[in-house]
Length: 123
Length: 113
Image (cartoon, rainbow over all chains, first blue to last red; front, side):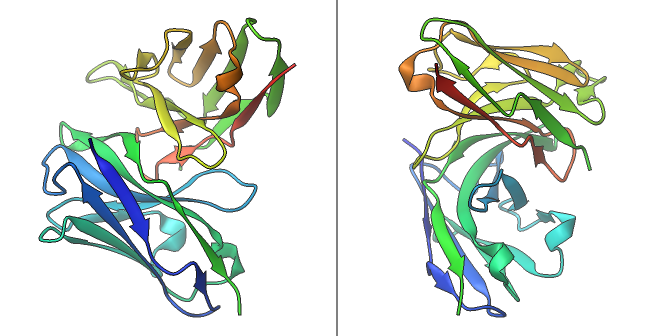
C-alpha cells in the first residue's frame, strides 16, 4: 500500500527557510502516471496548493509563492522536498504531501495524501 | 485563477437524512475535448489527511460508500450524502484540476443535528 510521510522541523524562525521532505513507500516516485505535490492548510483556514513536481524534475508552483518556493525530487531515495524561503507567521500551517494522477499530459486529482506535518513560524 | 466557492459554510443534518453541498467555479471546468469535468471532492476529518471521495465530478473513488454521490457540470456541482452517518462528520472540499493553480473551495462543515 502506498504511503507518503512528511518529515522536517516543526518550528522555523521568521525569515528562515522551511524545509520538508516527503518519503514515498509502496510505490515509485518515478512513475510516469503521477505528479507529486505539496498542499498546506493554515490553522482554521482552507487548503492551498503550493506546487508539484514530476519525476523528470519539472515543477509547477502557485504564483503567490513563486520566488520563495522550490520543490525538488530525489528518485534514488524515492523522496521529494519542499523549500520555502523567507517565511513569516503567515506560513504557519499543516503541510501535506500528496500524489496527483497524471493523464494525457495533464493533471488530474490528488488521490493519496500524507498525514501532514505542522510547521510553526515563530521566534 | 479559478475561484471555487461552496455553500453552505456549514450544515447540521439528522442521522439518516440527506446532506447536500454545492460548489461553484468562476469558470467552466468542463474540458470539451473529452467532455470531463475536472472537479474533485474531498472529505477532511480532524487529525487525518483529506480523503478523495469523488473525481470527474461524479466518479466515486474505490471504497467510498455509495451514499456519497457527485453531480453537475460546467460551473455548478453538488455533493450529496444520501443518508448521513455519524462517521461522515467532516469538512468537505471541492477542488478544480482544470488549470493551474489548482484551487480548493473554502470547505463545508457537516455535523449531526
